[in-house]
Image (cartoon, rainbow, N blue to C red):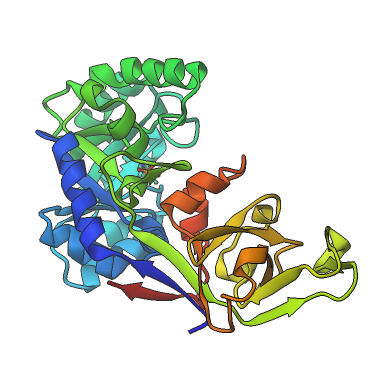
Length: 354
Ligand SMILES: *Cc1c(COP(=O)(O)O)cnc(C)c1O
């Protein structure tokens, strides 16, 4: 194996239990869109189900069908809006869909009246949704159309943020959603995502939460206290060399090695999900030590500088950790975004469940 991602299923189960503690009294949607953030939708869904989670959120009809076809029982919510042909199929397969405009509600009333609808309310994310000012009226409008209003939900834009502004904005979104969160005539009411569940635990509103990235014990580039590491991207040393003169490394001559310095080449690159920005100060871990990535990351390979004390210990085949939660925290480069790193894992990276 050239590159693989180890998924620690025991730690995943631990994290699910931590989430259930924080979500006590609330239902939990396990968010498994984008192939469970690149980690494998069916294995992750199966573990969620075994741990008592029977609500699944995905991004598209195709993803919903994948979960259903695997015989995983439970309710499935599609978070992204659908086109008309997809709505017909969603109705027949009993998926929950979300709706963000009145014309859509009218169309559904005529063509797919049994569809389970979650009305999406825009409280400040500005992506999909009815504005929070008009949402109450829309609920009445939908009721007049005899639609199956199963849920009402919204989405935070900065609940994982730590700045004062992020906190104020999130607070504002909580206030805007509160009137919806208390509508007991609507069965499912949810706005809390991972960031909110971890950082605003005591302010939960509605009766459900949606947990995505926190399943893996990390938020942004900060490991979550009392959660465990689930995801480790690994590879092996492919080549080692001590340079005999000053020379530039990799495409674009971004980095120089001095005579006598040693580097290794790893068989993993940006096509496998190693972000190019990591060349800007990122480090991987070899034999427990942080070693700096040098030069531009290539499509299929990358180079790492080897500290003096490791030169004789590292050989072809020595294992390398490219990222896990601690490495992500240490790298903490401004572009670091765990969602992007996990979902960016390439097809060549084997998923190994431990
Ligand atoms: C992706 C997504 C989530 C999950 O977000 P996390 O931050 O990973 O918990 C929740 N709700 C919606 C609408 C999403 O698109």
